[in-house]
Length: 128
Image 1 (spheres, rainbow, N blue to C red):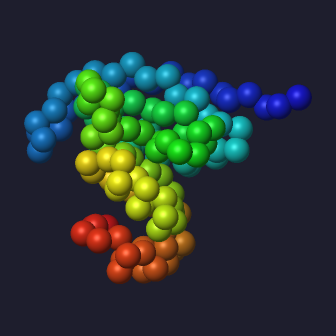
Image 2: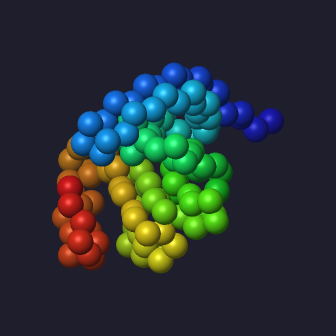
Image 3: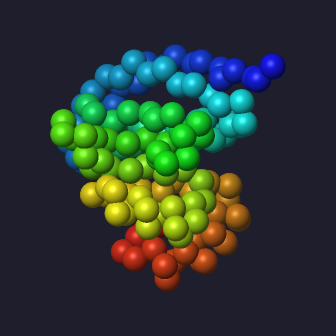
């Protein structure tokens, strides 16, 4: 029998004076059986940092052609693609071709720094 996702509920109030964005979000977060707690919390953090009225969690690990979060326009175009972890160059190129903006939240300390060193020349105009 296949393992099922664990469902979490969260209430998130965002007050971002830099953008300016102020909103409340009632979130349902499905933790994939292969996803550890740290990655799930980075997804929640990414949502808080990038929050908008149209930002949404995707099917994530269940759908390899989707990001972890995305912001879509009313016409269905991907405005913002949010990726977690250490995606390879081809995945980032695919994301850049499909979305107006791509953001990567790399985590795991030393391995993330090594990943960035390898990606720095390939990632175009990115910052870490």
